[in-house]
Length: 139
Image (cartoon, rainbow, N blue to C red; front, top):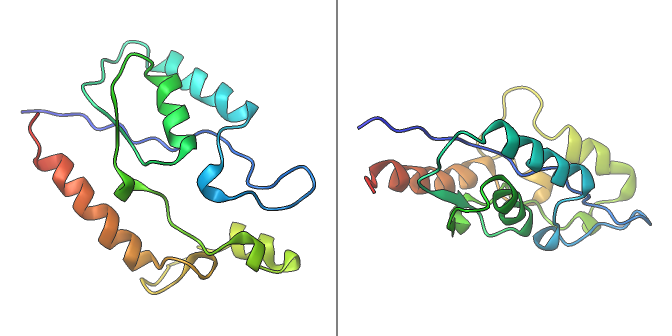
């Protein structure tokens, strides 16, 4: 059986409040640009019928999926969550850009930790079995 798998990242978000304070990552939803991106994606994929829509359990992924595929039943798969960094508030402001934006330049070793949080190898150990379950499921 031939299958198509569309992988999509959530739309744009604001990880920092207007005053510059980091927002709790688990609570971040789409910003205005992110909603517009999701709407544009919905328009591009208008002719696609999705049999299943899976997201992580993060609000920004759910919101993106609801905009892109409003008729679909959305399944939350927490193992698909993005790479988990440590708390942004624990990183000195003067190091944020380097730590956040430039974290994965070049070849990244499996033990490299994102913002002092989850390592790349740990991400693989979590996400790859979820993808294998999805590919093995013939429904």
